Length: 147
Image (cartoon, rainbow, N blue to C red; front, side, top):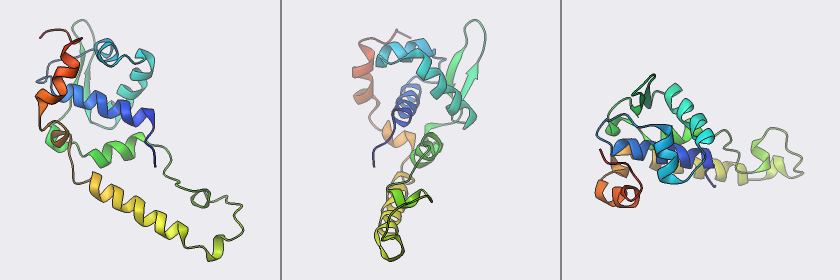
C-alpha cells in the first residue's frame, strides 16, 4: 500500500506544528519550508481542522497550531482520516469483475494485512514521531523563520 500525497502532507503539517511550541504558524510558512503548493496545503489544513487535530486562528497574526497535545494525536487516526481508499485490490471495491472471487483467499489475507498495519499505526502518536525534535528541526530550520 502506498499512502497518498494528502496523507504525507498531513503528517508533515502535524510534525511541523508539533515542534513549534504552540506558536501560530502560517500555511505559507509550512509551504515554503516543505516546498509544496500552498493551495494544496490549504485543503490539508482544512481537513486537519475538521478532524480536530489542529486549531485555526483567523485574522491578523492568525495561523494554525495543534489543537491538543502531540501525545493525543494517533498516527493511525490521521491516516484513516486523510486516505479515501483502502481497497488493496479490485475485489475490495464491491464491483469486482474477478472470475475467481468466490473461491479466492486473497481478500481475507489483504484484509488481515491492512488490519495489522493499522494495529501498528494505532500504537504511535505524533509525539512518537517527534521523539527527537532536533532530528526534525535541522532539516526545517534552514528555511524556517526564527521564533
